Image 1 (cartoon, helix red, strand yellow):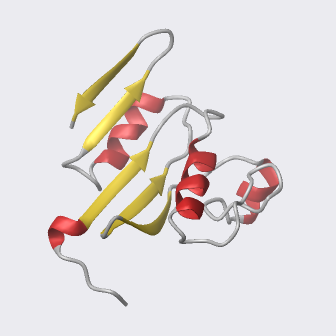
Image 2 (cartoon, helix red, strand yellow):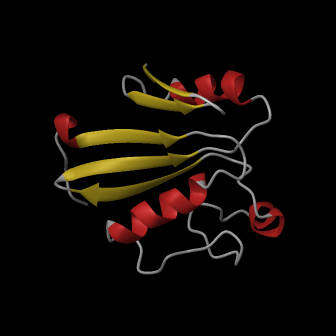
Length: 116
């Protein structure tokens, strides 16, 4: 296993409402980064991030999943989070595992970003 310095590690959580494309974004990042050799699709049940049988059956993320990808000499741990109905409250619980970092919040109709 390749060793990384602390300054080469990044934890990136993808947080949004259900159906926004979080898992598809994570799949694209894994594929383009060379971590996987196929672009998995949620609708086809071939997603790398949604591997639990219930997730495959329901075509939604139920649990947060983590997958590493290397990009420009950095190891990025992608955290694909479920789209909760009480998004804001539950999302902060996930943030505890990856702060300090950037958190990009999108709310409809306006958007804002916050440094967490």
